[in-house]
Every structure is written in C-alpha cells, then in structure tokens.
Image (cartoon, rainbow, N blue to C red; front, side, top):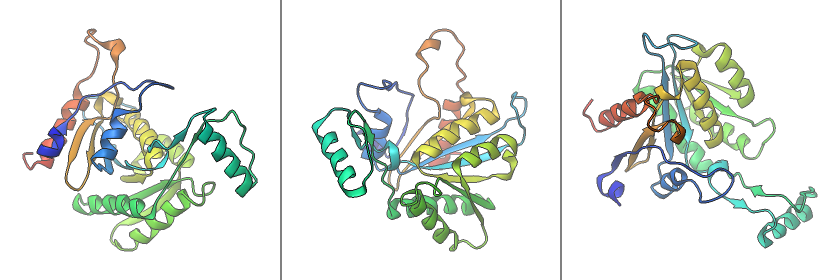
Amino acid sequence: ESIRKNGVALKGPVTTPVGSGFRSVNVALRKGLELYACLRPCKTYPGVPSPFQNIDIVIVRENIEGLYSGIEFERGAPETARLIEFISGTMGETVLPDSGISIKAISETRSRRIVRFAFEYAWQHKRRKVTAVHKANIMKFSDGLFLAVARQVAGEYPDIEFEDRIVDNMAMQLVQKPHQFGIIVAPNLYGDVLSDLCAGLIGGLGLAPGANLGDDMAVFEATHGSAPKYAGLNRVNPMAMMLSGVMMLRHLGEG
C-alpha cells in the first residue's frame, strides 16, 4: 500500500525458499503492481577489478510473464493429471505422470510493450543498438512471437540498429566480446540469467543495481538476492544497493 501511495520504493533483498515453500515475494510484487520492465545496468568502474574494462550494457527484462509468472502444476496433483491427459490427447506428446509442469506464456501485447520500452530507453539515452534475445529456433510459438514483435517494433526506430541473438549464443558472445552490445531486451527468464552473467563481467553482483518500472510505480533494488550466510561478517559490497538508490533519485528528477 505504501508503494501504491508514494509511487516509488527502494527495496532490500528477500529470501525465497528453493524448491518448496511460498512463492517469490519479488514476483508477486512485480505482477501486483504491474512493474513490467526490469532495468539492470552493468557498467565497469575505474579502479574496480573486473574481467573487462569499459563495459556499459543495460539489460531490459520483461518482468510479468514467461516462465516466472507462476503458472505451475505440482507433481501428482489432480489438475496436473488432467493437463497431462490433455497434452497427450491433443498433441500426441508423452508427459510422464510423475511430472511437475510450468507454463510459459508469451503475449504479443507484453512483448510489444517491453521491446518498445527498450527502444525508447535507447533513444532517450542516445544508445545506438538494441539486441533482442530469444530461443525462437526451438520455441517457435512463444519466443518466435517475441522475436516477430521485436522486429516489428524495430522498424519504428530506423535510427537505432537492431539485431537478434539466440540466448545460448548470446551467453558465449557476452563472455568473448561484450563490447559489441549496448541495450539487451529479453523475456523474463533469459533477462534474469543474462543480467547475472553481465554482472560477472563488471566485477560481481555487488556492483549491479536494478529497477522494476511500470507506468505509474517503480521499485528499485539490487540485482543480487539475500546473502544470509554473510550476515555480520562485513564482507558484502553495498554498492549495488547504493547505485539502485542513485537510479531512484534520477527517476524522481533529483539526480
């Protein structure tokens, strides 16, 4: 309610149980407040040890749908059995009865919104290139849709270079030649994974800030999660949180 009232928040990391327990608070917050764009800048800083220098990459991640949307069916549940039967009957595909299932839904509406956000960000910040990441060679109806929409939107911005990369090739290219990339736009899962990879390029997650942006509200937080094993040891780098605060101040027109 405080975020709805004030329109902005600086949030610390929270712990989500792995493999069981309650669902991610972060995911619920992003969906509940329609914070559809996750912005994660990855930039090197002078004097900070890192594998590369002069890196300046921004990940634009779709924040609402895809495999993180929480559409899941638990192993052994009656509704899971009905879904398995439906898949077998309509597609002829064999899904083992002891399977857990996650649904990946990619919409034209949300794909268009996030890709346009990426191009608008590139235009506003005088960036010359946007790269869309996908796995459309395999997931033709979901990632294929995302790619088709990205190509359509790119046509509206003739002054900004556009390219697309298959996600596994993208990971290799980032490790080998990261300087060729500027703005990267991706569906939810790929954006999450690649933003951690890019953090590794600049010296670690302790240097990677983030923002979750909607049309009316914004929540700023470090890219990293919680690290309870380091509590009280004076070993955690606070820069990611501080840089997230800088992003918030700029968002508010104070920076």
